[in-house]
Image 1 (cartoon, one colour):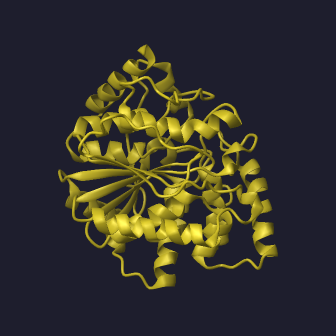
Image 2 (tube, helix red, strand yellow):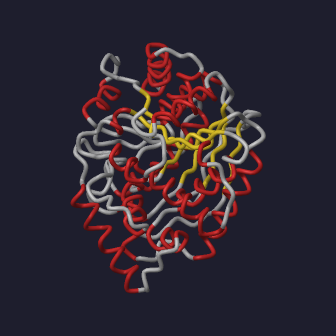
Length: 367
């Protein structure tokens, strides 16, 4: 626990040994295709398929030939291998939400009984440099879908792990945080070993300029419409509604801190009754302790959110793709940190978690 220690401990005590579900929201923004913006795929063409490949692997575990093979990365391996190991090992109910991808998510047939795939939108976001990333109706529909699904799922678990997969998402997170009034420059993370802060800031400044030219509407839904991505508003709706019935583990780093700031502002704007004490942000130590980011400082800036991190390590991993995490590559995504925290709450030891991850990864590379 890094921030709001008492609240974080109370949350952990309450949900130790209880039954979670995992919901992961996949989205796409043209921001992710910009040069030097993300290491989640070597080329823009690769990055268009990253979320599709991660979603397909999360669903199938690589048991069938993929339509979208996990794309080559600069270094490392998709964090979906961590999440899939926990989902399989704990037999978690799995909800995969398409919030706006370039193509439909491939699904294994038949789907397991405890797995749901839901398309909420077929419209990816435009690049945030446009200052008009999404339409007002798109944002309203995504928020309504998130709230509705949160209401539906809240009675089916003790707590919900909410993950994300958006290439370029730490850049849209920075844009949303700045537009909401947080001085987040230089504090976000990235999939690079050394965060590309200057590049992110260049991109975000273009979007902020366009947003201000259009009036700079500071309302949170207008901010995400101008500068955000589809995942952010869906997870905001899910978390708000779920918090009224169960615990919520926002599984991610910078992006989920931005979602927390957004959902808090949305709740205030629309007068939505939610339960802040039910929500924590959980990530990996590779994010929380990243020397080229300031995740803990960012969480403290937001002011009232517990930041937790799994202490999962790959120092002793058999595979160099996993050991690359210790050199700062990848770090997080697809709810990996939150899933690892859930495994700990179910009594898994660090060696047992590593063994489960390596077992799944070995099948992937041997395919």
